[in-house]
Length: 241
Image 1 (cartoon, helix red, strand yellow):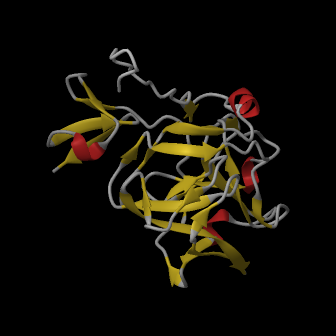
Image 2 (cartoon, rainbow, N blue to C red):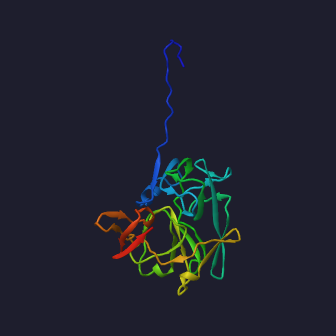
Image 3 (cartoon, rainbow, N blue to C red):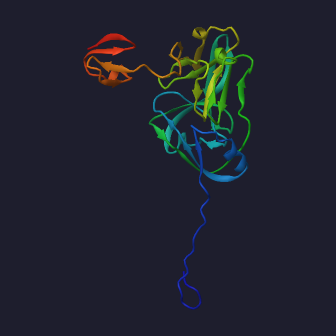
């Protein structure tokens, strides 16, 4: 573009400040500062492929094309609870503060959302807060003795996970509550009227046991990735074939 004197004029578009929500830090002050503002947002977290991820964000997301950040996703929302079975159904949109289950076709790492409106609203309790419910969080939380017996979360392997006092859960996720004195192993998850393989397991959020080779060399924590032979895990010898 040129002005009347023939001199070239360059126009610059002012870019909105990118708002980063991180699943390892407290996002409360950032949400307060950006409440009701339209801004591009990046989520510093990963949605793992082919497994159900819990998900909760403080803004709406359009699901008309069935994709998040260009990746096809299945998105489910809480429907109801029958007996000890928690039922989920297809979601047509993602609402600010509401918890969902999301299964992407491939990993979605640090997704970016253009010009969404931040809504600093208290996360919604889907279900009965004193019984079975599904509750989202924006920032990490630490479970304690007062609530640990009623909490179940989903592991990355797609299993219900019990928690212990002091266990920490990352933000922009969700957890399940169950009624007091309910046996966690009785809880089941139904998605679109189809039972899932998700059941309660005794593993908790505590650090996984380290694996060593017999010469003392550290072999990691996943038995699937160690070399064939005898390894030591939890003080016991295990033969890997």
